[in-house]
Length: 232
Image (tube, rainbow, N blue to C red):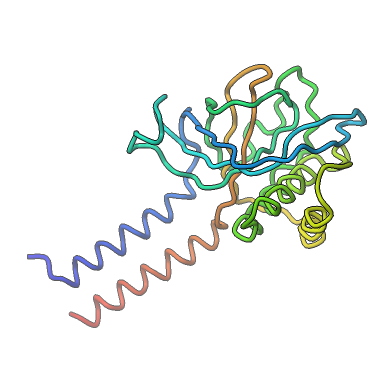
């Protein structure tokens, strides 16, 4: 028979495996459903040319099949995700075919018309901002600012913000960029869009650092083993 202590230990071990599973490799193609919460129009220079787009976070659901996430129990609620793709400004859809990546696979592959201005370390730079500030960006104004900062990180000198944010939103953006100061994070959940043409759009989500997950998992495992030893 399994003792209550044994049941608790099994539950803790299952939690450890779940946490460690978050750092696994990329999954297969899935459907990403997007609900744009609130957006603000901004003006910027992209590779020296004037451009306009909308900044802000979206709520996302990841679904293994093409179904309504609200009624499909298999859909994974992602929380807030941010657009990291400025090469296809015409994209404004509610669902995308994506591959979930945990590295920079495909990041420098030209998309759309091939005029892609991504910098080699841009994904890692954007990941640091998303990881550091996603939880703190708890209002639409802060999410507008964080999205613009993510573009600044991802594209570097190719992206120059010009107007569209309020003064307080610009202050949030500048605070994010001041604390960022070029840091990079290798921890990223990147939704690489497989939809071709103008509807191609990539998204990024802040995730815990793999080292933090390993430490947390190791701590939970150690606690479970210690309690098991004391009960035996």
